[in-house]
Image (cartoon, rainbow, N blue to C red; front, side, top):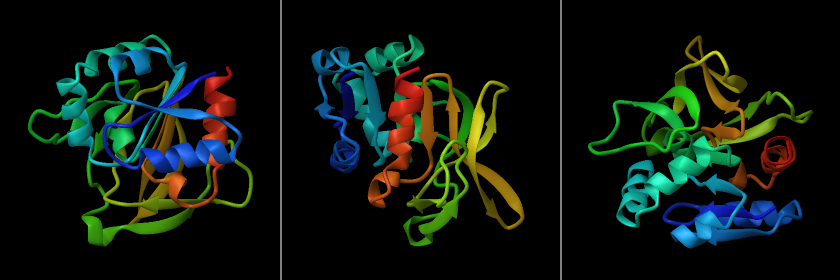
Length: 196
């Protein structure tokens, strides 16, 4: 299986390192030909608005959307979570998402850059120890459809917010596992999403 990491903007290199650490060779993709040649796609963290606009500028937006809707295994982290959401609450002007998961995502839900934090998460399907989540201007899931499986949540001021979800062949996390040295979320994507 050839896994591509969308290399338009953001921390795509870190995802490539994470995949290499679990023995998976990944390629950076940023052209239609490169995206058409991969079997699965990782959409990294970064600026979701910028990634969306660049995908449109390079005529990649519809290709990526179509490939996701046709069952290409896809993993989006942070900005990638926003980009695989069916709907974005209060999107930036002109911002669209590729779709893939029946959910409404709130951008910058935890606050600004200065409000970034880390937390240990119970992640369904990954055994102890807990998964360390790095949240940087992160989104959360406001609501999701009946076929969306919530894999991890964060409690903020007495309210629980989903921060890892999957629906079919699409996985999304609000946090950055590629920054922690713990690559079990990447292994989960490869073993549970890509190979089924």
